[in-house]
Length: 342
Image 1 (spheres, one colour):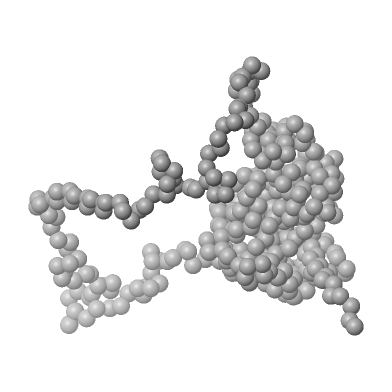
Image 2: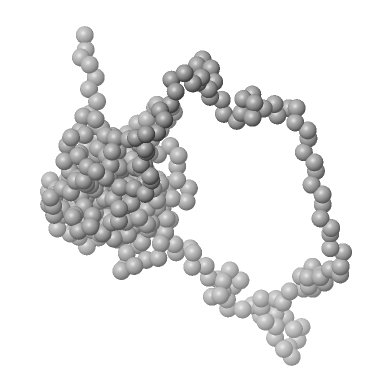
C-alpha cells in the first residue's frame, strides 16, 4: 500500500532583479507593533468620544415586549408598511415620459466633406508641363513625419501584468505570508503556477529597469534593476532569469513576470519603522492596525509569528491586497514607471 501524497509547494527563489527583496539584504529593524487600544476584537468601528454616555437611571427594556416578526421566519428585506412583501405585478404601469419639444429652427449647413468636394491630393503637380502629370512626393502617405505614431514605441505588458485587461482566473494575495500565485479553474479549484511558467518577459519590448509605485504608498517605490554582483548558487544557477535568457553583466536578461510579482510581494512585506508610524493620524493608525490584525489571522498556525513581525507595508493597503496588474505611468529617473493596482 502506497503512502499518503505529500504536497510540496514550488520553491520560488530570488532572481538578479529581486535579490534585494528576498529578505537577505534588508536592514533589520525592531518590529513595530501598534498599541492594543487602537484595535479591538469587535468588527464594528469604535464609538465616538463625543457621544453622550448612557444614564445609569435609564429604564431597562421590558422582558415582556413582544418580539417583532416570527421566530421561524427571518426579517424579510424590502417590506412595505404592513410587513408584507410588495407585489410588483399589481402595480400600475409607469406613465410614459413626455417628449420635450424639438427644435425646428434652421439647421447647420452641410459639411463640405459630404458635398462631394474632392480632397487635395497628397502629391504635388508640376506646373507648365505637358500633361500636368503629378510627381509623387518623396514621403509616402503612411510614413509622413506628421503621421508618425509615437504610441508604437510604448511598452506592452504581459497579460498577467496588464492592469487594463487583467485576467480573472489569476489570483495573487499580496497579504499572504508566502508568495503563491494561483490560477483558478473553478469553484474551489486552484493551482499554484509553476516557476517556469512565470519566467517569461514581462514587457514587449523587454526592459531591464522598472519602477513600480502604489498610490497609497508612493514613498516606497519598487525598483527593479539588474544586479551585476548578484550570486546565488554560482551565477544564475539559483534559477535566475539569466539561466533561461542567457544574459550576463554586459547583456542583462529581461525583467520577467516572476521578477515583478516576487518583488512586489517581498517589498510589501518589509516591516515599517517607528518614524513611519509617527507620520500617521489617528484614523490611519486605527485602519492600519485593523489591517495588521486581519493579516496576522490569515494563517492561524502562524498568527503568533506574524504578530511578532509587527506592521508591514502591505498593511497600508488596508483590505485591498489582491494584485490587479500594472498600468503605465510617466517615466522617471531613467526607469520605466508603472503603477501597481490592488
